[in-house]
Image (cartoon, rainbow, N blue to C red):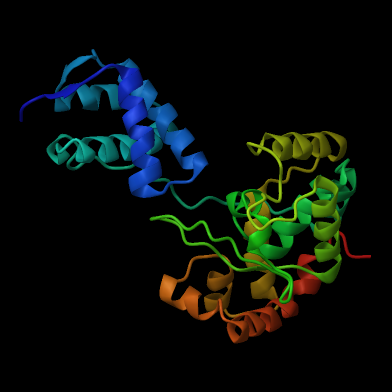
Length: 281
């Protein structure tokens, strides 16, 4: 196998980021994570210059398991785009066993919710808890993604690897969302619901609430809790998968219709009292 030439690291990273945006349609978080991991790989290679398969494997071996997850995905994209799939053939993404999530009790979640010190933070908590959507789907949603008639949040940013879900809101949360949008002057469909460039604002808000209560909550735990409460309420798994974006695209498309949304909302309403217990009066 002949070596492959790589230019200066800065140029390689620029090409890679463009590849992620244009060819793969990756999310900002994915581009950031994989670019950071690729930069660490490149720092261990003698570039600009020719790189062998052995050089690449040695560079990857020097990373932590978590870093290799993103790095392997990044180098596979890069070398395939360079016309050298042989350089990455057989490289495996490190696997992990299923993660066990600790879901706080409703009483603990109520303390946590009350400790959130601003209205937007409480709204974000409610949207994550009620919709069961991924953090990125909630935090990058735009005004045009809101279906006020069905009180639903319909993110449109699917990618090659992740499909978007279909989330529903209570009337109280919808009113909070309307008030929030008025406060930030977001009326046009293209305007983001959250006027922030990253999720750091939510991370800090959750850390402050944790410091005050001793209760640890993260967005993914609320997503896991959503599925658990839906199951407890008797919502069939296949419909939970649709709401959380795990169903095939053809199945999801059928439920974006008015009749499909009404059916999903009727099922969601069975779980609504359990989902909203941490902040329901």
